[in-house]
Image (cartoon, rainbow, N blue to C red; front, side):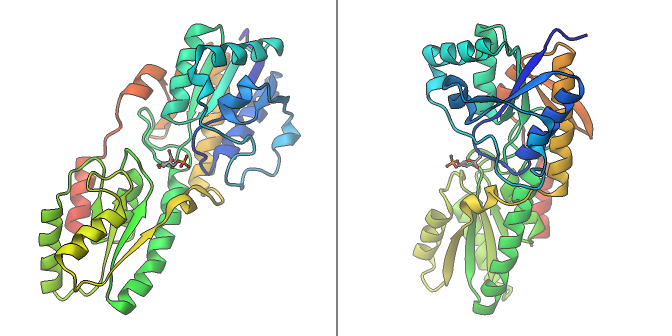
Length: 326
Ligand code: F6P
């Protein structure tokens, strides 16, 4: 039997569709086991400022389908300081909270790992970020929804690009990782994909573009991950326009549209499984680990590995995208 009696849950970093489903699963699983459960509002900032409230099963009804996070979120600067973390611990201590489930990405895990080493608080992470850039899980909560949103946007752009014979550069999110770009590019039949991980040289791209025009391909859709080394979509479009001024180029930045909206079925189910698994992990005495799903089975990865190991794009998938785009 676990010694943990009181758990808190919070969301942190960039929001992701499906976070609410994870919160619901944490609250309901904890309630099922007669644990007291608290919601921290506004991520680590809320922990520091004492924005912590008791949650009951009914408080998480009717949220499964909602994007964003009912617990709000933030990227906290104060939690990076020792003083900030001390205040946060005192607030948890006042409520006798012994464990926290944090839902977020790499920055969230980093804060949790430091906190659990400094203070007697168990910390369990759930990967919630549209970027899918977390080691120790095949998918993060929000990724599937974000990709579907981006695909829908690209499909719409295709109609107008085709009608006007235009070259569109479409920028998707992903500061450090190209998962959204790669998957959106494959699923929307893009002509080329610029990823942060692969140094696609502009020269190679220009060669490809020339071949494409020789084949009388009159319009093209190019997906650019925001963190690509050649720059964002605007910067690449400017360079291309400079070399081929007659080309009718356009730029669309999908931006935060990708972060909103109702979560997909896959994200709702993934979030539910991870939320349920996180509470069970706490009851098993685990701490400083992130839960994930690998080959459809729940997995646990130390925060250290989840933070410092990189989840790579599959080379074979990148190669496939290139071949299919020919
Ligand atoms: O970490 C998720 C992410 O969506 C990145 O892809 C993007 O670069 C970043 O968040 C944007 O963050 P913010 O909304 O804080 O500007």
